[in-house]
Image (cartoon, rainbow, N blue to C red; front, side, top):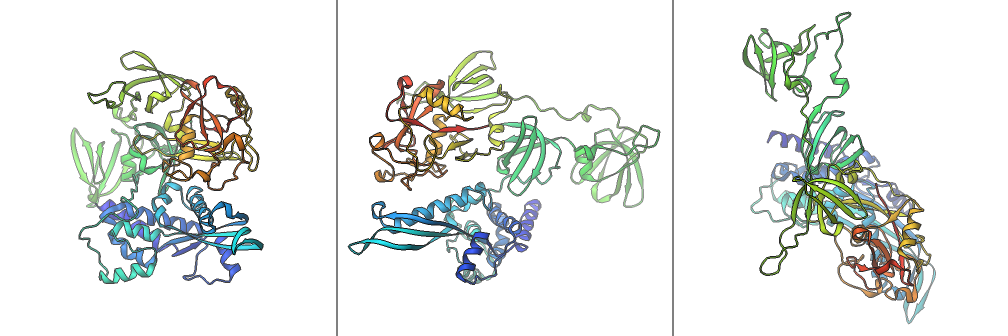
Length: 606
């Protein structure tokens, strides 16, 4: 309980020391050019603003413990403003109502603001997605073409003002109230509460379930070696190199990895940093001199059996060997008797000069057991009503993983093979590549020019997790170029490999199209035929011609225009996209031959 209160106090302190309002450089330039005076006076200290915004959003996950922060949130009310400008965009009446056309740019700017981590990472910002407001301003450049009093053709400068209302997001979650995004509304409500809030029956806030702040990891020693268990079931061993409000960075033999702290469910210290292990040596003795130790060092870096000298607040001294230590007590073996000492009674603890720890099996850092790989595969059996039975869980070792086929040896020694289509989830620790599935996800991935990042994070049951770069446009991957058709599956593979890329898998292509929302189409759940080119190869359009045919991740024309080759189970040629297709639609590309309607785009991953 005390720990949770300390966390809340620390987050409140960060908010109090941060700005009420932060403007990005683009926002500052925009409002300065318009001569608009902003109140309250905005801050340009990005670091302080980012810390405050993170702390505000994280408070919402603290539950009842964080309600003491409501008054602070109401008074400080952290928020941030960004401005996105799209100059000289071409509008025609054939693209629909002007207002609807402008709103698509607002939606695109909002998604880019959330996904690009301009201020805070997507995993944090997205929890307040419903509290990100957009306002669109437009200016017609030159003389528009009018038809019967309605604008038919024009060049328009578009400005989208984006506001992240972090305080309103957190307050809604903590109070269960839906009072909008203005500070005055929350101040009025707070005054009516008499400056104290005791919920009677808190209803879910407008932005869904309470936010989760994840594991705090307050006892982690930076640069220490740890065994970490993730919510996915994976176990990693490595050095924790970095830790902030939301993420943990771990370095292992296969590279650096970064994970959201919410994924960490268990952590075990295996070794202290070298700097904490080193001890000064007495001249010529070859043995360490005495060293004063803190309780944290006793807990995390002092082997059982070390000879210690204990001085109490009363002045008395005791010498013995370390048996155990907790947050509030240590136990010494003194002449064969184990005697506990309260932390409050201890004035100082030091090692005994000229001695080494007595040998004990407990000195050896615990070795993490080598976990088994786990596969969840589709159960071919059905119940009496024809409903498929739950997935089968198999444990053993992945022997190979290539051509969309996994070779597996069960813990009983039975050899089996599965296609990607049969596997619903896998937790792998011994992949031949030397990198597990979660390590591959956690490894930084930087997309080259012309590609967009598709990040499907862990944590949602029944959903895969991966990171992949995908071409923003159909081959030749150039905005404004007509996609290349009459391409065979083999040609598509060769062209991608020639660029240091590869063909996308069906899974990667689907999520790049549907987004984390699992939309049926790139633009939403309902078919709007004119949003994407429904004529296909009969009338191919240059890439990005239809501004509404863009996925949440930023990939254009994933449905409509031309069909695209993808790699299916066992590397079988498959086709996705195409006129009136859904993001989830897969068509067998029998033979993989070239046809007028077959094109492709490429992917790249760790």
